Length: 208
Ligand SMILES: CC(C)(COP(=O)(O)OP(=O)(O)OC[C@H]1O[C@@H](n2cnc3c(N)ncnc32)[C@H](O)[C@@H]1OP(=O)(O)O)[C@@H](O)C(=O)NCCC(=O)NCCS
Image (tube, rainbow, N blue to C red; front, side, top):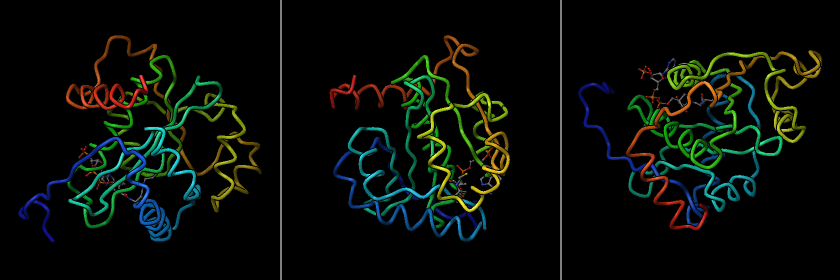
């Protein structure tokens, strides 16, 4: 299908809550399928883990009506010194419409609003993610500049490339580490409409 000529579907991007748990298995299946297709490693997440992210207002979901279109979530590490945006997935039916970018704007804004002093990092082997990270001000770093929180690195254990990470004493792997340092971006705004929506949602839910 030609994405330039077909009608762009109306997709809503929102901070997920407990009511979105019904999409978790579809999200996990879509992530698994994408990893298989790309032939890359993947950090496996459980249903409970993803559902908890939704309940904690740490996840972003994209929906076309009630059909799942995309997802990502955030988590803090090392006593909230670091935040990651992870698990970005756009269902193949909705790729190429700029949806990943919209989701990324939401997770990035969520992270900046909730933990403004935290460094944001990303561990990725995806070109699209590296491109979006670069546009937001992330830069590539060695793994030593990322968190030393064991819980974060345990997330890599489900990846097929984990033996490489172990062999390299956690200094390198297939993924590229990218870091956003808030100190280098003082006073820079995040996308205004997303910012306003995130503040509204978090205030309503009593998260901030
Ligand atoms: C990667 C993925 C999230 C992109 O979703 P999408 O909604 O099609 O992406 P967007 O349309 O928002 O594109 C965002 C940017 O990435 C670029 N991009 C998208 N797919 C790309 C690809 N395969 N290679 C290189 N760049 C790509 C786009 O050109 C766009 O950049 P631009 O605004 O400068 O033109 C989606 O293809 C996907 O879910 N893939 C499988 C899972 C995956 O790879 N996740 C990343 C984990 S590392």
